[in-house]
Each structure stands twice: as C-alpha cells, then as structure tokens.
Image (cartoon, rainbow, N blue to C red; front, side, top):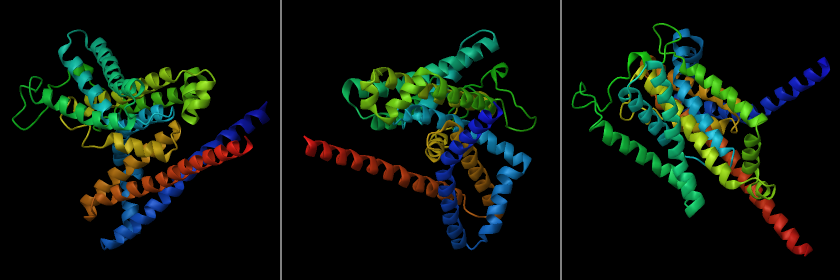
Length: 368
C-alpha cells in the first residue's frame, strides 16, 4: 500500500514538473531579456532583481501586498482556464468581471435586508451576471456563427461603457465630487474582512484558494470536467462519443463568467468598498490572469502559482520604481517576454497539429 501511494505521489510530482517546465524556461528567458533592458537604463541587473524580489516575496508587508494583488489575477486565470480547456477562447473575462462587480455592488447597496444575507445574495447575483454576460457570446457563436474571440473581446468595451454610464449618472454617489465616478460605499457589514490587521490582505485570497481546489476536483472527478476537457482536445471526437457541444459551450462559458464575477465582487467588497469606474480595467487583472493561465498550460494549480509570481513582478516593479528610479515598464517587459515565449510553444503546437492533420488526410486519400 505504501509503495502504491509513493508511486502515485511520484507520478503526480512528475506531472506537476512537466506542467511547470515550460513556464520556468519561459520565465528564465524573460528575466534574461529584463537583464538587457535594465543594463540599457544604466543600472545593475543583479541589485535590481534582488530588490525587486525582496520587495515582492521576501518581506512580509510586500508579500501580503503581492497576495492581495494576486487574488483577482488567480480568479481571472481560473476563469480563463474554465473556458479555454473546453476549447472556447474567452477573451472577455475583463468585461465579465466588470459586470459581476457592478451588479454585486448595486445589489449590496440598494437591496434592503440583513447584511449577511444581502452579502450572500450580492455574490450570487454577481456570479449570475458574469455568467450570463459570458453566455451572450456563447449563444452568438452557436446560433449565428459569430467568432467567440471577437464577441468576447468587443463585449469588454460594452461592459466598461455601460457601467460607466450608470456610475456617472443615476447611480453616482451623492457624496462624490465632480471627478470621482463611483457608487456609494458598500455597507460596512458586507465588507470582506481583513485577515491581518493594518494590511489589505483579506478573505478574498482564501476564496481564491477554495475555488482553485474546487476547480481541481471539477477537472478530475466530475463528468462535465471530463467532457469539457475532451471537447477541448478534439471537438469532433467528443461529439462522436456522445458529448453535446451545446451543453459544453454554454456551461463552460457560464462558469467562466461566474468565476470572473467573483473576482469583481472580491475587489468591490474588499479594500475598495465600492464600484469605481475603471477600477477593474486599469489594473489589467484579466489580462495578467490570461498570461498566468497560458504560462501554466491551463493547469489550475500552475495558474495559481504563476498568478502569484506575476503579481510579485508588478509589486516589485512598483517598488524599484520608487526606490531606484527604474521604470515600472521593466516588469511589464519581463511579463510580455514570458508570454511571448509561451505563445511560441502554443503556436508551434497548433501548426504542428495542423500539419499532422494534413498528412493524415493525404494518407487517407492515397489509401482510398
């Protein structure tokens, strides 16, 4: 029995290392690119990297800031994994997060009742809103053949401008000045509580951990998780095996949008305390989450850790800008380089698979 458990553990460890191998290589290349960029600024790359990582992972205060920033990124990466693993390229996580956060904030502010019950209701409303908003693109693709990539991308702007319209008009806070476009504050009893006093680190991170664990359970032990994964690997084969493509696209997109809605509500109910125009778009949570998901090969556990790493780069980049005068864009260049080299592998695998299909087609034609 012990030998079997040991072998199972070693196999799982091997699988995890295989998942992380490509991201680690891409990260090393990205950091190498960063070395040359830092040299161009006239700074010492070694000292800059030491300060960057000490200010993001090795110091308690900054590490908690990293985890705080990583929380919405983790959820956005999981939202990306949910749809992409099923073969549906959802580029609209940002818009779904905005809609979820906005609906959750309005529900909490204007629905009367006990704070705890209203808070739960607001979270459910945010998940439903994010899921239904993602479902629009799913219906457009299935019914009318509209590209999922294009529709989800364009709906990001719809979400941003529609919520901006309401926040700058009828739902604008009475106490706000002429510049601030924001809602009223969420009632204090509905705020997500801080885990450590005098920091911004709150219970949202625990929620992100729980959703990551549930995601792993979903992928390994549920029928829908298996069906969505098979559809992502080969749609025609999955359809031939009895898997219904309509169910897969609708449910995977709805769940993706629901997770994005949780990311939005976590920011609104967290240290922000209200919905502010641009709060979920200017921070690029969704796009960083997309990077994290791609780096991890759409693996939920890998996405969890890569999200924290990318958040650390951002926090560390802000620190070195303040202390050493190094541009914040250094961290962005490193992130972009990492994503570029990950994308090279994805593109290679795509064209390789396409070439194999062409060869199989030629062989079949020859045999006939």
